[in-house]
Length: 337
Image (cartoon, rainbow, N blue to C red):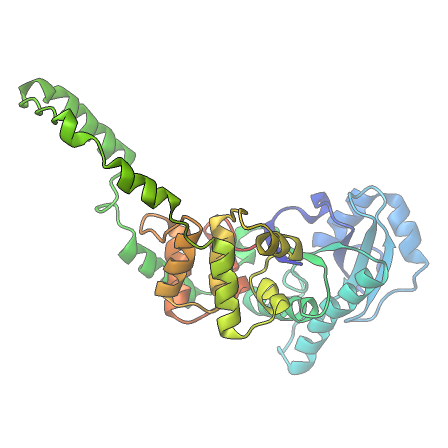
């Protein structure tokens, strides 16, 4: 199942379980903790009083009450002081123990906030890195839809150097000079219309020569090309990858992968094709080839294409990192996200 990034208020996310970044008392506090207690209602506090608190890195479960979820999983992140390995391990444990608790309750979906990244002082870039690793590690051996819910734009925090490099790459590939603004396009159309009567009339083509060669056209239509599905599985076999390795690396659901495998006419979204290109670690030419079999192409006037091309050229095939950047630019994410 996919790892989904989103910007939202976690109290409004529909999932089997949502995770609360709680304090050790479990009796409510500020930030996400206070928002969840307020939205869930007074009965949540009553149940929390019976749990006897929670240690850092551990997780405990309550009902969801007024929230759109069955359960609330309460976990206590470490207060960030030195950024030691111990603090990193405790933060990793928050995700691991929460996910194991969700699986034990047969949850199919769970939503996390970015734990310890608020008042507890963990730098957002580090908090994101640990969240990505913990969730990705867990999804290697479990089928579960996991959402990482980021409240604001700053939560993504892709890093100043990376952002600068990507923005420079976009500016180089995508320029207003090459792709005129809507105003410039409108002025060009007005000019075209205003000068039309002064331009010589185009000579009409000879209709006999304009008719295509019908027999040649029929031969082309009858010639069958291999499908996207065939091409994808050909590439998978060439790389010696297992099917679970591929759909998990592509952040695609098992259901979508099965449809592509069994239905030769299934037409995937472009973001799904790009996700498979990342999963298979294709170069630019190979990515273009795979896209062609689905009826797509990489273009210089699409920022998603440019950002994905940047990562491919850098040989960076971390789909979660790519999706963090796409989210930061308010673009559609790769895979089933």
